[in-house]
Image (cartoon, rainbow, N blue to C red; front, top):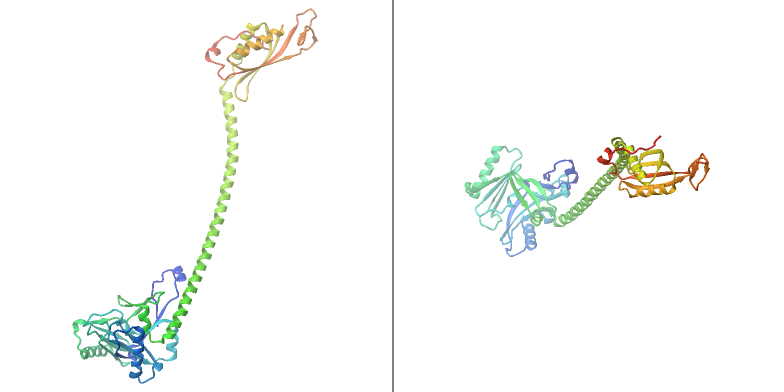
Length: 416
């Protein structure tokens, strides 16, 4: 019994590979070989019937007690028939045949590759030498001899027996081909069997394998049905295992992707917090830098107000607060006294008309002491002139302090 020797690399390849196929190569010396005439116009079925009839005539035992097979090619007027009495194979040998893809004598390897007319092929097996000669081009040998060896025959005796058989056939030594003992190479899913004779591939198609097989046709058909079922079951199991593995890998990849996504989200959240902190720090730094670099020219700003006040009337500034607005614009908050409410309105109008001023807010305030001369009028002496106190908030444009204005002399103002 030989095993399919197709490539089986690696653990995974062996795991997913199809179950190994077997072939039983039987000893050539146990078979008798005959060439029987058949109808060249018939088909394989009619040829099989003619072979059975010929065996019933040739064999000393009923055909039911024989293991037999035959080789025939369409158009050939003969068929090569071989048979053996079943009791020549003990039960322990035939028990393994049920797992074999093909059960044939080893010499059928000489028949797989059609030979040209005049060819002679020789196969020396452990127990016999087989010689087939093709005298015509019908692909079926015209002469076939199987010469068994005695169990104690040495190599010299085997060579002598081979030469005697070739001489009995009158074969031309120049056309004799010695073939190596066949080894099973692979069995395809459709039943095609491939042997190797040395480096020579010998392919037996599925239909030819059924005729060469020595087992009963019904047994072969039943076994092939079981084999096809097993192959499909194996393929289904392999597909199921592959699907489970793919699902496991996909689930692992999904879990890993989710973890990476969550990690990225956490990093983004942390980055946002850090960015917000850095942005606030940058804005504070920028604002501090702007305040630091930009010295607020209080006297120059007061100069604008003083010049406008000189045109508007007589004022006494009692308090000045300089600062920057949220928009980094210079701002003055002034507290002043004037002798007339009209003069304060004139100052308000004059400041609004200045291009350097952006906004001006005016608010009157009551002074400490009695009220005389109307709203906002204050005086400490009944005989003194009434005064008005007001608060004015002036916001300047960003370009209010120009170099020429910064160099201009400031007007005199009373600033405590």
